[in-house]
Structures are given as C-alpha cells and as structure tokens.
Image (tube, rainbow, N blue to C red; front, side, top):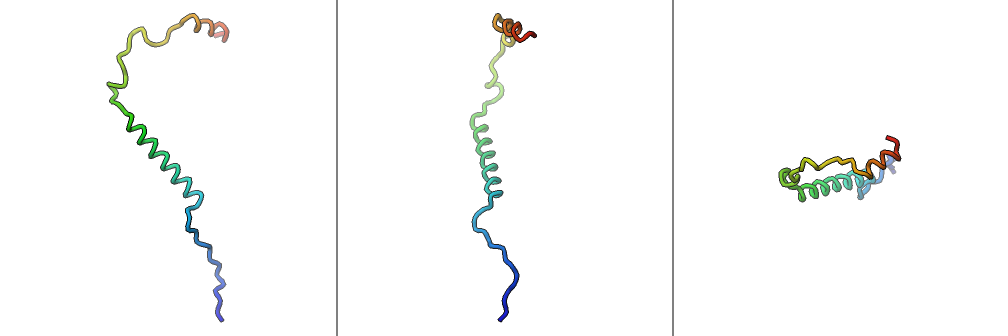
Amino acid sequence: MKTDNKIKSPRRETASRREFFKMTGLGAAIVGAAAAGAGAQPASAASPARDKDAGYRETAHVKRYYELAKY
C-alpha cells in the first residue's frame, strides 16, 4: 500500500478575508465615483457670481471672539 505523505492545504471555496476587504473597498470607490458624477454640474453653473462685498467681514461677534481668544 502506497500512501501519499504530502500535506495538502485545504482549498477554500469562499473568498479570504483580504479578498473581501479588497472588493468592498473597490465597490465603495465605484459607488462614490458614480454618486459624484451623477450630481456634477458644469463649473459655470455651480459657482454664482460673487459680489465684491462677499467674503470675510469683521463683525461685532468676530471682534468679540478675537478679544476672548486674545488674538
């Protein structure tokens, strides 16, 4: 009687943990790209015309914050 003394590793029919995380990461990236592309608008339509007065304003509450923060 001849016996095979070689140890064979059991073959897995399911994906390994590493493969699972690779596929979920790839799937999340694809879903994120699809969601970003679906809601995209042309740059000219996305940014409204800006006023000269828009932007940073040093109002009373900002001045109060600077006083309390000792800036």
